[in-house]
Length: 420
Image (spheres, rainbow, N blue to C red):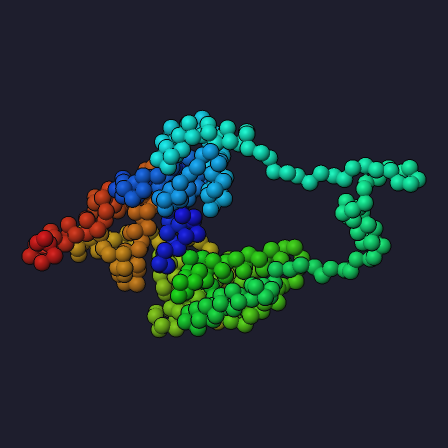
C-alpha cells in the first residue's frame, strides 16, 4: 500500500512508512516484537529493494492468483493489465541483475530464467508495429522540389493561417479552486472547516487532525502553504480564501501556527474558569501553558502588533509583560523534580498514569516526555540522573505499564486485578 492509504480512519500507509524508515535507518530501532509481528503478516513488508518493485510484484501476483495464466511466448501482451505486462517484460529483460530473493519471488508466479529467455526471444522476433511513412519527394510543374499533395502539406498551411491571424490574449491560469471539477471538493472541505470552527472556536487545527474522517488538518496546511507561496510570488490572494477568513480571521497568521494554537489553549483555559493570573505566574512557568505565557511576556515587544492585540484580549499587556524580569530564567525542572519527590514519597515509585496532574502540574506527561528524551540520549541528563535517585526504575527497559502494574500488585496484593 502507499503512504496515503487510510484504513477505517487510521493512516495505516503513513504508519507503515514510518516503521520502514525506523527499520532501515536504525535511528529509532523497532522493538523486536513489533518487527516480528509485521514479518508474520507479510515477510516482505520491508524489502531490501525499492518498495515500488514489491508493489508491482504483488500486482502481478494477483493476476496469477485470479487464475489468469502468464503466456511468455506472447510477451504477456494478452494480460488485461498492460502495466503489469510491461513490468513483467522489464523484469525478464533484467532478470540476471535481480537479487536471488527477487528471482525466487518471480519463480513463485512462474517467471524463471527459461521464461525470461522466451520473453526476450519474443521481443526480438515479434514484428514491429507499422509507422507512418513520409510522403515521397516530387517536383511540381516549375521543377521545384516538395512533398506530395495530401495531409503532409496541411500542417504547413495551418501554420501560415495561424501566423496571419493574431492570437487572442489568454487569461493567466490560476489555482483558485473555482474550476467546476474542483469546487465540490472545496465545498466539502469548507463544510468540515465550519463544523470544526463551530466546535473549537478556531481553525488552528494540527496537521494530523481528522474531522469525521476527513483530513482537515492536512487540507488547511496545504491552503496555508499555497497562500504563502502566492504572497512570495507577488500574486494577489485567492478569492476563495476569503471564505476561510470569514470562519476564522486568524486561520493563516503571519506568525507560527503553533503560537496560535497555544494562544487558543490559553483562551480555552480562561473560559473554562481555571486559575489564571499572568502577574502572579499562574499557571506556573513549569507547566506547558505557563511556559508559553512566560515566553509571550518576555518577548512581548518583539511580537507582531496583531499578536500583542490578541494577548491584550487575555490580559497580557505591555504593563504586564514589564513585570517579568528578563533574568534569571525560570527553572521548570526544579519544580518538576519537587513534584516527583512528593509523588514518590506518597506512592513509593515514579510510574504515575500519564494523565496525573499534581497541584496544577502535569506530572504524568512530564515524566513521559523525560522517558522519550532518555531514549534519544547516549547518556542521562542531570534531570534524569535526579529521577533515577528518586526511583531507580522510573524508566525501565520494559513497558512502563508492566512496571506500573507491578507497583500496584506490590501495594495492593489482595486486589482482584493482581490475582490473574
